[in-house]
Length: 112
Image (cartoon, rainbow, N blue to C red; front, side, top):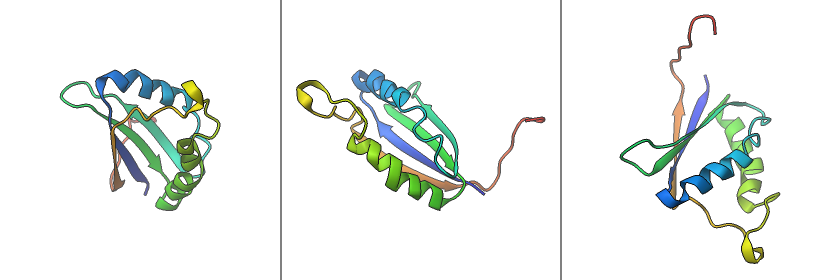
């Protein structure tokens, strides 16, 4: 079965809009990756400053290939416009933790 990767991003309130805009600009960056199955950016509603970046992959190898290729390039700023003064924009998140899971059970609505 699939693997799920959840990147837990600590984002101060004043950086939320920045983070969401950056993800919106990269919305399709992961979709063509081999083994990619699903993506969601989850905004906290109450009691936390942590966003969850949920991705689902066919297998660990597919995730690692994306991580070492397109993801690494994106975080190096390739294809990104520079900020004021010709510098790369500062990260919106102040912290990041990666959680990994194997999917052992799943359900979907009937007919889906």
